[in-house]
Structure formats: C-alpha cells, structure tokens
Image (tube, rainbow, N blue to C red; front, side, top):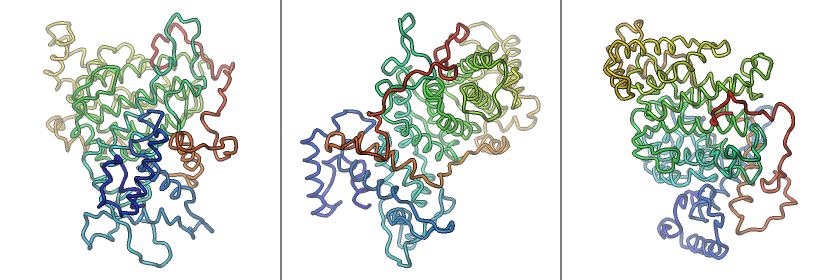
Length: 534
C-alpha cells in the first residue's frame, strides 16, 4: 500500500532513491524498462493511462486486493474484514504529531473501520498533501478515479482531510474534463449532418466504435465522486464564490474565461444530461446528475453568462422533446418518479432545470445572477409556457413567472434602448425592483455571503447523499478487471479473452441491432427543432 501511494501520480524519472528502498527502486526500474520495450500506453489516450506504468500497475493491484473480497458476514455481523481495507481505514497523515496519529475523524463520510483481530499494530502513514496532489494528476483516468473513490470510502481520515480543503478544483477539474470528452455528441458522427442519406435515430444503442468513452462505468464513478463532494454544503458555497478558473482551454464549444468552479460543474452536467437523453437513456446516470444539481442549487450565485444561457436553452429544448413524447403517449403523463422511459426521463430533467432556475433567482440571489434574469427575459415566452404546463407544476414556479414580469416592467419604465447591453445595464441598475416585495427587511442583507448561505437551509432538505450498495463487488470487481484487460495491460499482456467469465469485454460485445419498437426509435419532428435534446 505504501509503495503504491509513493509512486502515485509520478513519472518514472521522478522516483527518488530516498522515497523507496534500494531493492524496490531496482524493481521499479526493471518494470519501467519492460513497459517501454512493449510500447506502454500505445493507445495514446490520456483518459486511460498515466505516464507512469509503475503507478498504474500498483494502483490496479491495490484496487483489486481491496475490492475483490470486502468482508464476510454472519447473521448481519462482519466476522472477517479485508485486511487491505482495514489498512486503508487506519491510514494516517505523516504531518500529524504522535498525539494525533490515532485520532478518530469527526463527521467523516464513513465510520472508522476496526482493526483486524486484537493486535494493535502500527498503522500506515502517508503525506495526505502529496497524496491529494497526486490525485489531481491522475483523477482524469479510470484508475485514478477508482482509486480516489476507494480512498474516500475506506479511509475516513483521508476523506475528512479532503472535505476540509479549499482547492478541490485540483481534483474536480480533471473529472469534469473526462466527463466532457466522454459525453461528446460529435464523436465519430453520432449524429450526421442534415441532408445525409442515413441518420441515426435517438434512443438507440451506441456501438463500440461510436461511443466517446471506453466504459460507461467510468461515467458512473465520476458522477459518484461529484455527488460525494456536493453533499458537503461548504463545497457548494466555495465552488461558486471562492474558486475561480481563469480559463478552460479544453472546452471547445466556446472560449470560457473567469468562470467559477460551480458554473463549470453546471455546464458539464448539462452536457452529460443532454448526452444521456439523446444516446444512453440511463436511469442511474440521470438520477446522479440530478442529485448533484439539486445539491448545488441552494448555492448558485455569480452565475457565468454562458451558463445562464445554457440552462435556459437546455430547459426549453428538453421541454419541447417532452411534449413530443407526451403526445406519442396519448397525452398521458408519466408516473411520478418514473425514470424508466424517455418520457419520464425528459420530464424529470425538465423539472430539475426549473428548480435550478427558481433557486437561482430567489430574492437574495437575483442581483448576483442578473445574467440568468436577462436569459429568462429573452426566452420569456417559452419559459412561461413551460411553467404553466400541468406536468411541470409539481413545485411552485410562480417566482419565475413573477420575476419575468418584474423584469419586463423595469425595462419598460427605465430602459433607454432595446439593445442587449442597454437592457443588461438597466437590470443591474434597478436590481432592487426585481426582488420580491415579500422579502421585507432581508433586502438589506442580500449581498451577504452568510445571508445567502443561511437562506439555503430554508429551501428544504435538498441534500442527496451517496450510500454504497450492500454488495459493491458486483459492480467494482468486473469493472476493475475490465480496466486491467481492456486498457491497463493491453500492450503488455495477452489475455485469453474467450476464457474470461467475470465480465463481457467491451471490445467483444456484438453491436446490438436496432429496435424497431416505439420505445427505442423516435422520429424527430419539425416541432423538435433543436439538436441539443432529442
């Protein structure tokens, strides 16, 4: 365990003699030489492997031994613990003093695991600062995300140290980058240009050559990590108010500069939801995206103008598709909470977007989210239509329509022109008139960070938390072996794939035939004129 974390996130030339023993250093050099001779990482895919084969192999081994056999239970009681997970659970930070070495975490994600047997052997120690920075270098890979997940759930003390950090963007940004490239709808022409003789229909299975990700399980792990982060209220507050990203060079749709981490999370999640509604129609994926969005919704302030435009666009396009699916269902709406059908998924996504808008324009936040007010004003006809639809009225949406009306009144009474710049300036100058008259004395505290944070608790219990299944091996063991065979050792080991029974290899899965049923093949109509959500 110690050796694996020592080389985590390092390149081969960065392994210093004082970090490991002489024998281990010789072994690492031999592994490195063998991997170079076999063309390590011949896929040249940065989302699969890192620059160090030693780090990849060692973390894969740790993941295997810590996930392959979690525990044995008798009458609901754990009688045999995985010794590697127990070792991770007792992992300490080398920066602590002797008095702190055995302390128990307060308010951590999981309770401290008990020791194996009655022995009081000394626990492992590692520098958590170096470990966190190492995760910032490898979190974009499948192995890196899996290792980070394993550490957060098996080492409460490490999880507590991560939750207390103010620079989580070092890990979150690589995760968002992987999500962005893994949900790219332009990959390999998933949707052909208009006028092409053959056009793919939505809600069909994606072939192995078409999909922009290696394994769909990677998307699950990244979203689970985002959910774990977002369930801490301080993460939401800091991501919108304190963590700013100067430039996002890997985002290709447009040039983004000076954007908050929270705004960047929103725009990537919008893309993932769009990709899911178009291609995957995965219930688990959508529910996790919705959980992260709702966890962040009470803290949305200083929303980037591009993100403000995106949220209105995806809401409108999603609602248009919902109306088409509703008509095909004979006008009968979906059952509450149903995510098993395209109709239910689009309805739930649209309602989530509306709740996001509602929380972002409440009186104490409207001045900080003036770009969203302007975006709603531009699309007021469509937004009002959505808010008045019977299927969307599960929550009180009057604050949205009332705000649009007040914005119209401000423009008419104080506007000096009809250009976008003049309208924005008018809204900023008279932002007090945009606030609800029922806010009373709270208007004076609108710009207070503490006021906005305290009001978030008044929005109801919006916190969704992640709980691991009772038998997580069912998911993680096949996925780990999939990563090892399909990516990690693809250029170093030759596996007899026809004899592997623990999982179906992605490369060997036959492309599913198109379903001619109405559930999986929906024709695009003239009413659905946006390619963003179909």
